[in-house]
Length: 262
Image (cartoon, rainbow, N blue to C red):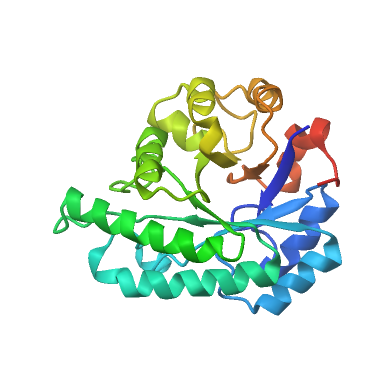
């Protein structure tokens, strides 16, 4: 049976952020994820998790200035010190929230940075982050993102992510596999998942086109949910989609899977 986590950055946008925890619990989600916890005191977030019986499934490392269009800094040679400081901050939050995995958004390669330089920087940063996170038992995830939603994003495919992970050589470094991004990049959702399953620690979903609820587009989600069960996937499924109307009105797809058990 799949375990679904509400992505509170994208779901329940009609509510204040701290009120989204209660709404997710009421709708049957057992876990939550979101992009960044850092704008909020970790104590306030931990209290919401305890009050509503939720698991903090995932959050990201600090990723630069999101409002100015930055989508990560891990591949930027001039931002290494900032990246390393961000690892410490992520550990502080993840530990307080009981979060066992954090994702690294690698960023957009600037035109004045070569592919080779960006690659070297990313590998070194991932080695640093993985080593620090391993001391606290936290997994580090690497997410490929399609080149249409974020042009220039440095890691675009699971194959590229797998090669980087092999080069880094850290036991706690895994792929975050988003079916939506894979559909936009190349399709072959099932075959690609099976190919990389041993290095996939977290999956996310949204339909295509539009990045809306499952069932609104071209992806066969009942098939994919069966695939995950049959493949023995025991991780969470992050619901990182944009509701077509309100979140609650678009949750009919979840009804067969609705549960509060983690």
